[in-house]
Image: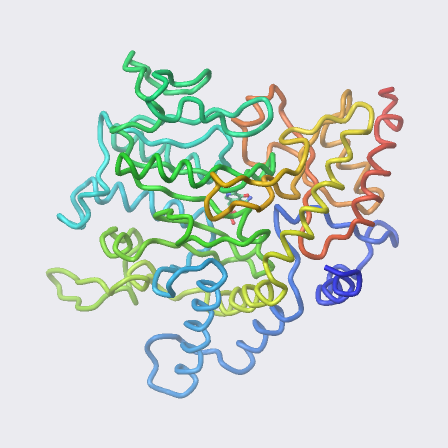
Amino acid sequence: FTPAELVAVRADFPLLGRTVRDGKRLVYLDSAATSQKPQVVLDTEVDFYEQRNAAVHRGAHALAEEATEAFEHARQQVAALVGTDVGEIVWTPGATTGINLVATGIQHATLGRGGEAAERFRVGPGDEILVTEAEHHSNLVPWQELAARTGATLRWIPVGDDGRLDLSGLEAAGGTTGSGAGRADDDGRGGAGLINERTRVVAFAHVSNVTGAVAPVSRIVAAARRVGALTVLDACQSVPHRPVDLHALGVDFAVFSAHKTLGPTGVGALYGRRELLEALPPVTTGGSMVEVVTMEGTTFAPPPLKFEAGTQMVAQAVGFGAAADYLRELGMDAVCAHEAELATELLRIAEIPGVRVIGPATVGTLGQDAGPEAGLPDRVAAVSFVVDGVHAHDVGQVLDDAGIAVRVGHHCAQPLHRRFGIAATARASASVYTTVDEVTAFREALAGVRAFFGAE
Ligand code: PMP
């Protein structure tokens, strides 16, 4: 963005104008947890309630038609942001629910629901589900549960010292599973790669919410395809920050959340390839997701409605649509370039004595092997760090006293923190509205933290 463009962007976000802690200007560096919302999103939601509110998909009156139109238009806006067909976007309350929908749908298929069409989803003893050591709990616990309920084995791609996935054991060629590559019940069948003919599902984050590292999606998807495994992409930390074309990436399912994408809370999206959404059994059943209901049984509506039982979060979905359009109008290439500059500025905290960054130390560019992502940055502007001799919560508190909002804790990624031998980190993360000036203020405040606690 030009300086003038960035001033205009900031002016779109009313909350950024407020002060905190006795009049200090707010420096909001917690956008990876949740982003702020532009006025157009707030206006769109209010306008929906003021002018269009009605039950969608059923009423035979003008308001119901307008509400339905707004709701379905939002689906088009969100589909356009991520390069999918409109019918491939299912509204969910958030990314977590979307992942659970897929994992539990697979369990239902395994129980025989969905018949022959759903056979491709079945998992059982001897099958493997692959995740990574870097996952947010939301993309780990549902797969642990699926494994426990079906008798399948959970394996994971390890994380290297640089915070990136260690793919050395991904496929069988080398004959090793890679150091630290885990399986809960290693029975000596090692030798097969982490992705092998037993792999049924590969679920992984596009971008880690802790390290900011971008996963090699193309390579993982290609390996999964070779063995017929389903891919599930957690795109929570990519969709708000870079161009994402889910068709080009070739994943089978993907999830993301509106509230991290300049949109409202309470809504997210699940993408599924059309034929997979058609075959996957629904999990939540009831009103609105049916075709014909008799006392003996029910036929389901086609997707996406099959997965949208009950009254939906209509106003929030409409707000999400406005957020998607806002981002597309800024241009995701411009957003990505702006945030790459912020990432570089954030990473300069490593120059402060006693500060250690957990994750890639620099911003590089993805090479040709990244396929559709070639030329994009290899990390985003979410930087987790530890300060020697000072607990992350104390770091957060000193920064907060200066009006600077960062996140502290394990960021819902305990295994990744355990991998680095630490209980907690502080994380500073940026968004479209973040300025270099704010990052400088953060670095200056951070430079004083160790002295404050007498740690130097
Ligand atoms: N995955 C990642 C990588 C995330 O950062 C988050 C949110 N912290 C989630 C999943 C969960 O998203 P939600 O809470 O919106 O369901």
